Length: 186
Image (cartoon, rainbow, N blue to C red; front, side, top):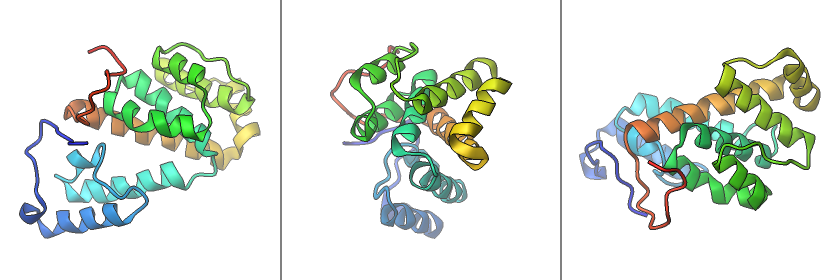
């Protein structure tokens, strides 16, 4: 898909050595492409370098099951109404085990019906953070029981990182060039 944004397009031959180095790291890593926020972040190679390493951990390295990570990402994409973030992660979330009903409820910012307490907890934590900027004590204790303290730290890291992704995609109008209808009204 042809990516576009409101930033000046960069071609490999016109990139600085720092930009080329970060691009090589991104392309050789688990992502393999410059999709999503990297189209914007590559304009600041130091930010791109740090962000891509944090993102690789948040997406591929936490102790959370992929289904739970993708649930947090879609919760974030829906809250920010981030078209590109949703377009990138909705098929991954489905493949990771989120049902069509859960995905549609998330898109509509409704509370889905979950089969597993872990899923309900991940969603409740994200919703609490986005709606109140806090996690209530009982919900926090439930998260620690289900994921451990390190798992809770990583979950909050996923929410924070993907908020940065959503803000980047929205601020720089990153468009994936898809002919599919946008998930959120503009």
